[in-house]
Length: 455
Image 1 (spheres, rainbow, N blue to C red):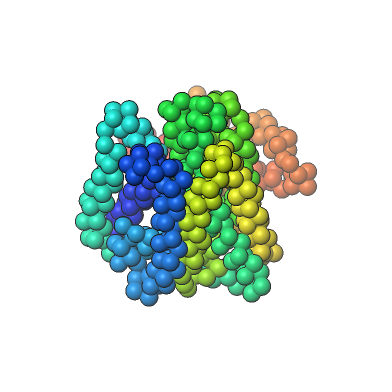
Image 2: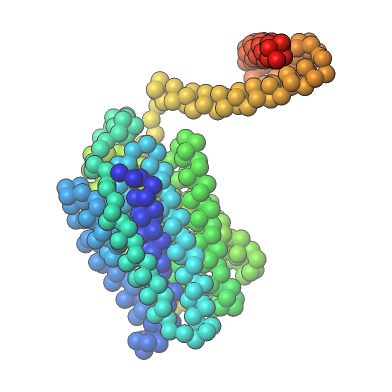
């Protein structure tokens, strides 16, 4: 199995998926004119897509557990089966591929970033809006050929970390976490759908921004989303807790959304759009799914199906609700997103509380291991510098031992120590480091002498 090639094909699917998520909403006015219907009717049609997903996700998730991922990734290139096959595949690749799931959002965001620019350009050039649909179809066709050359990993492998998480949580708290994460499957999708559907019209009609600026608010959201994905991916690789990320990002997204909904200042709205994309669409949905899968590692497809079923409920209900609200006021439809943001914080808060677990010996040792990796890397850098200093000392015919320099180092350690009780131990460690550095310099010096004598 070539993981890199398989990953590229899976990611390319999600680039097109990102285009598909907003292609109808970005062409709402063109579709309304073509169908000769009001915007509310177009919004209701978009909600019909959510109905199809509502029935498909749970069934397809269970079937992918039974029949494997590849067939459902192929089906999903043109349907809602994509998630049930892709997220589980990355988990089953092993290693840190759970964090790789977050990068799927980056590729979706790339599609969401480029499409509004394409639509705006087609409108400006008065070209057929259907070219945006044709682009997505061509990419899918090419990727379909590439994908079917790849081999997929064995399905439903349960790794040790996922089993450990499950064992540490009681049955009752696992159910509370399930409720919170399933609910977040709804709110995380809803908050993004509502923003992408209404931000352009809201900005032009409520604050009278230009059409270009209104589309740019969506593109900035996508830029923020891509940036957020990269940061979250890095934080997950550094071992930051998923629950902390979820709570912090959801609070940040609510603050950014408040600014977007009530600030008529274009510059401030642009900054807030970037921040909203970073916090609300920067991979937090994927982080929550990874956490959900850890609760039920032996039925990954079913869990993915449940999670995205709630997302499909959002795809169905949000256009209906906001379509009705828009008949009264477009601003009312957009500001309904604030209520969803509050609900999202409640869902992740419940999940974080339920999943919390007392510190265990194994968890603390894992933390020590992570810290040790950083220490070893820094010590390697320090010894590289020691080598350079040793060479300079040889050139200047200086002794290896510099007593005054070592005393200054020990004083600096004492000054920078945040815990007074730790200070003598830290100084002892640094004395050992400097003693070994001197020994290393001496060995290098002796080796240099031998080479000279040999020559």
